[in-house]
Image (tube, rainbow, N blue to C red; front, side):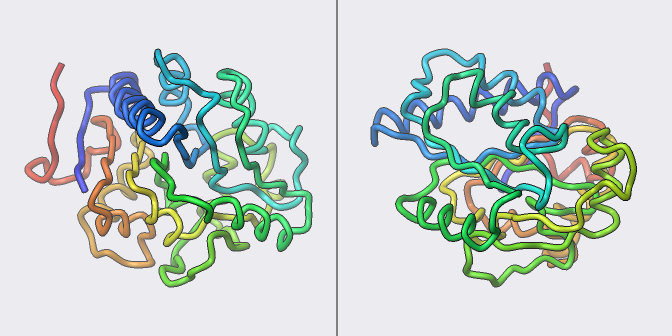
Amino acid sequence: MQIVVFPDKSQLAKAAAENAAATLRLAIQKQGLARIIAATGASQFEFLEELTKAPEIDWQRVEMFHLDEYLGIPATHPASFRKYLRERLIDKVGLKRYHLLDGEGDASAVIAQTTAEIQKAPIDIAFVGVGENGHLAFNDPPADFNSEAAYIVVELDDACQRQQLGEGWFKSLEDVPRRAISMTVRQILKAKQILCIVPDARKASAVAKCFQGEISPEAPASILRMHSNTTVYLDKNSAALLNPEAVELVET
């Protein structure tokens, strides 16, 4: 795993998008298709904006899998990750091959259908973030590091719910769903390459715990340190609590 730190999240997003775009082009050239996992949330805004502007990506040859989704909210809800992905990725680039998690459907049927699709071939690249509580996807601490399933139904902890409220997705804490469908830790780690995009000062504590503390289910994203082709993209704010000798600072 490699950690790189940028002066601000704009430069972080551009660098991560350039890396992602290069991987997509190469996978399409070699295989005729690139398979990706897309994250959502406020931390991904700038990255997805840059990625969707990247030149020479044949998005008709990209197949996208959804990382997680709340149970019980419609696709029209402001917090719906289906809505997020349609507006910020799918509709922007005209993506035709995608697998969205229907949080209003029967969870077991949704999981079975999406699992069958994701297991057809390896994932070329996964885009992920880190929650304020260290979560990876919606795998809150203590995360299940052992499940062999591709997706599971999870219970969201209080810290996770407060983050969703703080980011402005819901009007009150009571409105934040308690349950969600999430890709599992092991399924994420099966991706050939992982880009972990984590800007902003509110993530600094989680970043330090996950990337310089113990590898533990109590710090779910710490498991990314076991993946040989992961790059963690930070800005100076999210990296503020890291030992500076342990990271690569990208100066511009």
